[in-house]
Image 1 (cartoon, rainbow over the protein chains, first blue to last red):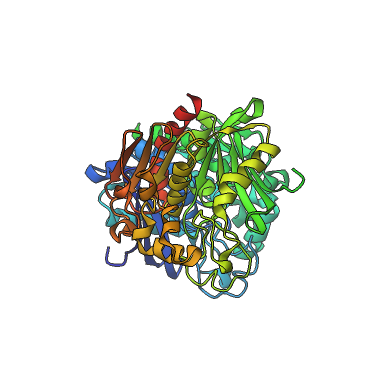
Image 2 (cartoon, rainbow over the protein chains, first blue to last red; image 1 turned 90 degrees about the vertical axis):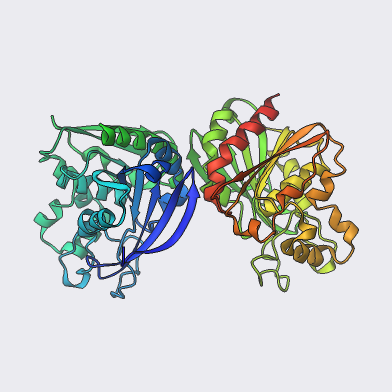
Length: 278
Length: 278
C-alpha cells in the first residue's frame, strides 16, 4: 500500500466509504478511486462489485447519490468506483467538450491520447492494486456494472473478459457506440479510422460473438431519457444468444439521472450478489 | 400557482422530485424549494414532512444525497425542502464566511439583515404557498426534521408551533446555539445583543417551557462528528419533561455528513409517518 494514499473516509450503513489516490502506470497520472467496504469486510473477505460511471462523472457520484451502500451493506458486497478518465495531463482539447475527453474505458491508439488507457486501468492495474492492498477484498470474485458511458464500459469489459467477472448489468448504457454520435466522436479521436478496432469496444457487436459462461445481462433504461430518445444509447441492439440472455426493462417516465439509478440499484446489486455468492 | 415556476422534475421511486422558484415576500428575493411527491400523491392527498438543511446547503442536498425518497415513496409522505437562506441580495458580508450568512431559520431584527426572515418563510409563507398551489398536499398534516443548522430550525420551529406539526426529529442539531460559537456568531449578527431574543431561537431553552402535545424528539448524533466534539451541537442539552421525551442515539463512528444522514433517515421518516397517519 506504499503508493496508496487515503484521501477520504466516512462511515455509512455500518461500513465505510473510503477514497484513495495513487500514481497510475496505465494512465501516467495520479488517479482517484472510491470503495464502499460493507460491515462484513471487518471480519472476512467480501466479493467486489465494480461500478463504472458516465461522462462528466468522477469516482464520487455513485458514492454520493446512488444509495447503493444500504444494499451493499445488507448483501456483504464491496463496491469499487474508479474515476472515469485520466485527469490533468494537459493534452490539448481534453476539456473542451463535455462529451469528449472522458476515458470511454478503452486503450487509445492515437498518439495524442496515448495515456487514455482506462481499459487496462480497470481490468488490470486497479484489480491488482486492490488485491495487493486489501486483504478483505476477494478480488477473484468480481462483477461489474455501470451507467451510460460506464454501462458501455461494464458491458464491453465483461464481454471481453467473462473469466474475470461473474455477472454484468447496466443503466442506460451506450450499447452500440459505433452507431451513435458520442461513440463515433470518442472512437474517432481515441482509435482513429480503423473500424475493426472500434468493434472491439462495442457491446452490441461483442454480444454477437460471446463465448463465455452462460449469463444474463440486466439493463434498466428510462423511456424519458433524452439520450435514449436521441439514439445515443441503443440498449435494444445487444443481441441474445444461447449463452447470453438480455433482460431489458424500459422504465416509464425515468430519465438519465442518478435519481433513476437510485430507484433501481437494489435490483442490480441483489442480482450481482446472487452471482457472487453462487 | 401564477408566481410559481417549475425549474426541475425527475422521476424517482415511482414519484417525482420537483423543484420550484418563486418570489418570496418574506425574504425579498426569489427562493427555490424542492418537493418529493410520492406515488400516492397521484391519487389523493399526502401528508407533508419538511426537511431543513444545514450551513452551506441548498434545497437540493437532501434530494440528491439522503436516499429518503425510497422510504417516503413506501410511506406515502411528501418531503418539502426549502432553501436555507435568502440569496443574491448583495448585503455586505453575506458570503464572506461559510458559517455566517445562512438563514438560521429566524427572523433577523438587525437592520442590515432585515431580509433574513427564514422563520416566517418556513412557518408561514411556504406552507401557504404549498396549500394554495398543490391540491395533493395535505398541508394541515405536517411534521418537520432537519440537520445541523436545519436541526436547530426544525426543533425551534416545532417547539414554538406544536399546533402546526405532528412530530419532530433532527440529525446532529445545533441544539443550544446561545452556548456555541456558531450560534453566538449568527445570533449576534442577526438579533443583536438582546439575549432575551436569542432565547426564542434556542431549542434547549425552549424545551424547558414546552407546553404542546405530548411528543418525543428523535435525535441521531454521530460520535465522530467533529462539530459535536467541538461542542457546536450540544444535543444533550435539550431538557425532557412530562410532555417532551428525548430519544438521543449516539452513533459510533459516524460523522456530520450526508452519509450519516442516509444511514438513519429511514428511522426518522417511519417515525414521522406514524405520527402523520395517527
